[in-house]
Image 1 (cartoon, rainbow, N blue to C red):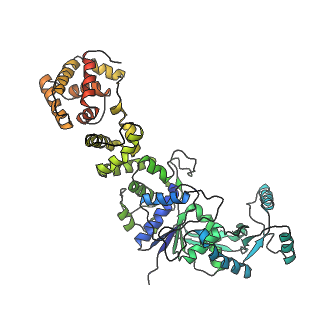
Image 2: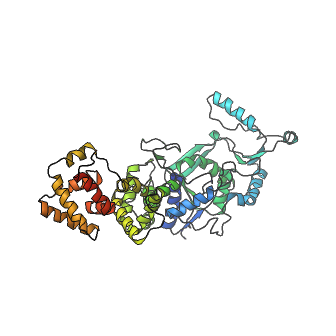
Image 3: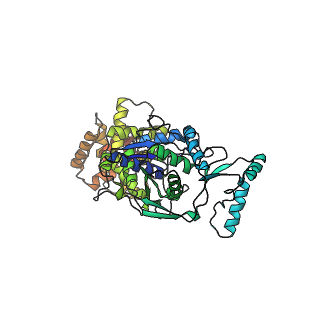
Amino acid sequence: MAEKIRVRFAPSPTGHLHIGSARSALFNYLFAKHNNGSFVMRIEDTDQSRNVENAEEKLLSSLKWLGINWDESIDVGGEYGPYRSMERLNSYQKYVDQLLEEGKAYHCYCTPEELEEEREVQLAKGETPKYSGKCRYLTPNQKEAYEKEGRKPSVRFKVPKDKVIEVHDIVRGKVAFESNGIGDFIIVRTDGIPTYNFAVTIDDHLMEISHVIRGEEHLSNTPRQQLIYDAFSWKSPKFAHVSLILNQDRQKMSKRDESIIQFVEQYKELGFLPEAIINFVALLGWSPEGEEDILSREVLVKRFPLDRVAKSPAVFDIAKLYWMNNHYIKEASLDRIVELCLPYLQKENLLPEELNEAQREWVNILVNLYREQMNYAQEIVELTKDIFVDELTYNQEAIDILSEEHIPVVLSEFNKQLEQLEEYIPAVIKQVMKVVQKETGYKGKQLFMPIRVATTGLTHGRDLPETLYLLGKEKVLKRVKILLTNKHID
């Protein structure tokens, strides 16, 4: 009988969805779908001090925007619920009691101050800090004395001494840890709430999670979780720890690193397309067979075995992300990209909130003209700024061009032909250019450059007839006439 594949993404609600966490979610999702398995979305909220209001909603919203949908979670339910750790508190207690009864865990009465003092002494000696185990062998009388002082105990797991903890990792192969370097760790805090390592292990077991796919930073948690599995004689899931994501300097990415946009919500706010983010993130530490870079979600699902996840770190190449998003922008429907760009133009008061039919057509041409240059939709404002300028200024290069002898001839004929136009659309403007060429004898750069510089102030730009259409007949004629009467060039 084939193994039932069940994977989970279990973030803590401590803030926005980080790009590294999004990758973990995506790898779990792709692996589940590749194997016709189940993808579980679970909230690990046992560390109440770190939980942030509304973070849970933001996490779910960001994942949904990416199109990473789950089979079981707090919003859709499922037979293995509840799907918040704090709603599962009753399910943990019997396992705590079992460990205490079997002598595999014990109550610890050390205060935070005592633990900090112990830590500082070990650091001063050059030792790696770990709990000394001083409460391991407390007598009933000592426990009673501590409780009379009002101390509330935590519960620590009794780590076996001189044991090698072996973990078989799908990505890294066999990984071994020395138990003597771990120290007895807390599984239940003084407030009665289990710690992450204990809760996540119990939850993964009870939810029948078959594979735990997560970032390399969780590798240090694995021996503690493996010890808990062993203590209950449970079969542990298969682990796969995905490589770190490095910045462009090949340094470990920190949340203060401003060279990288780090949170999914920021990508959405900037006007990235979710399919581009999915494609890019999938290639951070995983490679398909072949040389393709552009891979749809369907293709990713079809091609995603874990054995192609890399052990070496992935480098976050922002230039590649921009290239990839630009590709998807060019491939998307114009209507979709217009809807993506509109809010940025409206926020800058460049367009009204409500558009009539003519304005809508104008925006369609604007966005279509510039989308080939867009890395993300917010750039539409910067890319099109010259379209919205009322008064032109000319740099020295433009002045030099406008000083050439043939310029008045070209601009006069262009002005004459433009004034006669009844229909001002790109196709008709293009025909005007041909008429000006025929009447003046100037063509190519000698024809287009004077018109471009006179009407835009620029020596380079997008398609000229469409640019002139976007500027509007009135503004174009005004600018040409100013130059013909030599009233203003600076």
